[in-house]
Amino acid sequence: MIDTARLISRRKRQDMIFNVLGIACLSLGIVTLGALIFDLAADGMSRVNWQFLTSFVSRRASQAGVLSACVGSLLLMLVTVGLAVPMGVAAGVYLEEYSRRNWLTTIIEINIANLAGVPSIIYGLMALGVLVHTFHMGTTLLVGGITLALLILPIVIVATREALRAIPNGIREAAYALGATRWQVIKDHLLPYSAGGIATGTIIAMSRAIGETAPLVTIGVPTFIAFLPPAPFQSHFPFLTFKWLDSPFTVLPIQMYSWVSRPTADFQRNAAAAGLVLIIMTLSLNAAAIVIRYRLRKRIKW
Amino acid sequence: MVDTLSATIAAPSALKAEIKHLSFYYGDHQALKNVNLAIPINAVTALIGPSGCGKSTLLRCFNRMHDLYPGNRYAGEIVFKPGDVNIVSPRVDPMEMRLRVGMVFQKPNPFPKSIFENVAFGLRLKLIRDPRVLADRVESALRSAALWDEVKDRLKQSAYALSGGQQQRLCIARALAPEPEMLLFDEPTSALDPAATAHIEDLVYQLKDRLTIMIVTHNMQQAARVSDETVFLYHGEVIEADKTSTIFENPSKELTAEYLTGRFG
Picture 1 (cartoon, rainbow over the protein chains, first blue to last red):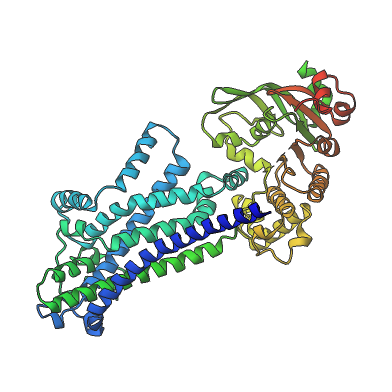
Picture 2 (cartoon, chains in turn purple, brown):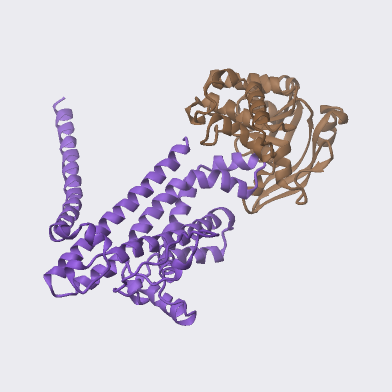
């Protein structure tokens, strides 16, 4: 009896130790993040106002703002996600559902895993050499989007494959047994059931892309942009235009970087404020993506 | 020897399918060895035998499920009537066979969609789009699967809200909806409790008026209860095929008798 009691109390103690250890590790991360955000907020909060959000860059710190950087970041994300998700999902579906296991697909798989580990500046160098210099596409939103899309492509591919693998094989067999073609199985079953997992991967990928600076600096994204890209809508047919894809742009991290390198305290405050705006933008994009994912998952009734 | 056996099972005019010299290979492994069988129309044929004897392999030849995985190879013929289509010929589209031959799996595998959408999927594949026709066909399929009264008020609910036995009947309704000529059951009750099992067995018994049924089972009593013909397979070969009553009461092979009395398997 006594032995059992001691045994149990020892196990409870072990349980307790792990519990405390886990909470300690978790709080370390959260406290660090909180301190960072608090520091940014303490420095920059006073500058985050309507004037800051709606002004272009300026030589005078008090008149400067992040309008072009905000719009640039948002449009760049639109291009990046718009390119990376269709390509990544298609590649993931092909690898998981169509390709046979052979040496070629093995090499492709290893390379995708490696691609995820390539430093982002290498993608910038590649884009500079191929898109900007060879194809003379200039430093436009399209080129920036292609660069970041390639950067996050492996994340989307891997997320797609994992999500597809999580679908029980019985579901595939059931659909095929009713006489569905491969495309019907993918369109009516596999993609809807894996959409939540793909969305999670896309959220992670987007969070990474929105903070990227190095590849964009490499392709020559400027810091001083005092105009907005042309609007994507127009009053006459066909109402949508893609001229904005050809427009120069800047993004929040680059704007922030340029202000940080200024010696005056005014610009340092602007940099902190831009950092806050970037964090808020990232969190809101994530929140939007999580809402979309929740909607997608609710339609699937496991 | 086997050819004469298949002749005794049923008159040729009453056959749904005839298996001639069928062999099947998973890569280098030969899982079926020169199988010859006659499958009578509007009857239940049970496939029995120990694990790994090839009964599921044989069943899955009928709707070409093996084509989903690489490295599988068929040799020989399964002549399917009417039309005398050789099911396992590479020239025959697996999709065509799957529209004519339905399947119910071991574990209930409804789609994570509504009850209605589960049954409607096979109909949509046949390009039936009229909502009224869809609703009618879904209802009649659910009635045939003895599930209608339990689900008629909650067709929009998830199929996963149903119990295991109900899910399996939903899978039967889903397979019945496109009105196949033949239905394959791969151990349909092995994941179910005795009450749900009895329900499915009743269903199998009723359905044979409308279509031809093949059922793989590990449960001897089940084979005896539901089937008209029983085929005993061992190591990929047909050891004995005959009327179920003959197999169970008076098997002609020693091996069959030993398996039925539980001395191996």
